[in-house]
Structure formats: C-alpha cells, structure tokens
Image 1: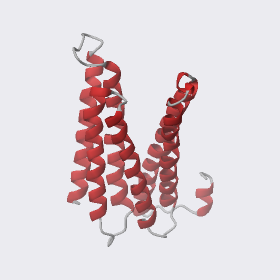
Image 2: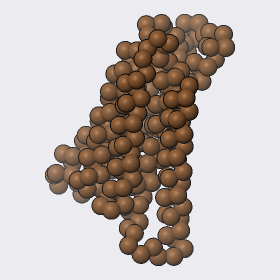
Image 3: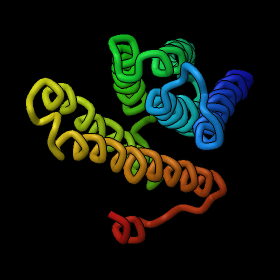
Image 4: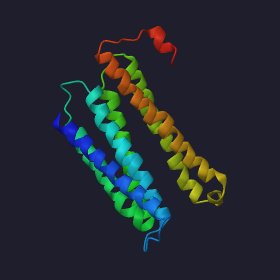
Length: 211
C-alpha cells in the first residue's frame, strides 16, 4: 500500500509540473518569456500531462486493482521508476530542443516501457473472466493500437508527406485512441472493478449490451 501511495504521489507531482508549464503557456500571452520557445513548452506540457500524470496514475491504480495478491510487485516498481525516468527526460529535453534527438529518445523509451507494462498486466491479471477485466484488456489493446500513429510519424517526417495532412492524421490517430480508447476505458475498468468488489456482478447478457 505504501508503494501505491508513492506511485500516486509521483503522478500528482507530474500533474503539478504539467500545471506549472501550462501556467507559463498562459503567461506567454501576457508578456514575453525570454529564451523560451512557446512550441517547445507546449510539447513539454502535453507530454508530461499525458505520459507523466494520466499514464502514471493509471499505472498505479490498475496494478493495485487487478494484480492478484501473491504476485510480486517488485518488477512493477522497477518499471514504474524507469518509466518515470523517461518522463523526467522529456520534461528536461522538450523545453530545450522540442522534437529533437533526446526528447524523441525518451518518448520512444516510454512507449517501449508501456509495452512491457501491458504484457505483464495481461499475464498477471489472472484467468478470471469479469466485465472489468474485459474492459481492461480493451484499454490495453487501445494503448498499443494508438502508438501506431507515433510509429508512422517517422516515415512521414522522412518523406515529402511531412508537409501534408498525413502528419496531422498520425498525431490525431494517436491522441484519439489514447483519450477515447486507453484512458477512458481504463477508468471504466477501474469503476467496474470497484463495483464488482462491492458485489455488483454483471451478467453476460448485460455485458453484451456494451460489447
């Protein structure tokens, strides 16, 4: 339980950092901020908010909601801190270079760590078939599916397509399935897991109304 509190505290710190960066973005409309590029700061804000705050909070909540007792959380703890390291890397690199070698590297590392998290969660959540687990698997699928947009950005940027709408389509593909797939359905999984823990079990017929 102490580990969960620490994880959530880290996620909240990331939220605070994203809020501070967001406040600077607003302040930039009031006065000039010497030495700060607005676009770089915007990238910093979006990455820390999504990958540092929302993702890390879901990491903590999903592990403690769905991983059965008896499964060691040591490797999850190690993965959490390695993932947080990539968030710090993005926080430090994006304001300096925007999308550059270091910021792209840290973003890529975060995605790869998310794949490890998904693989472990899928294996460790257990065989029990419940509506909340079905929702969780759906959320995990959309997390992986959304990253196809990120992987497409490399080839697009390396070709004349970087000047076309395909670049923005790739970005919107990623954001759409992050928010409307991974984030929202993961929150629903947590809600229904809490309901199931209270004894509110849904029948297969009721589940089929959603799927």
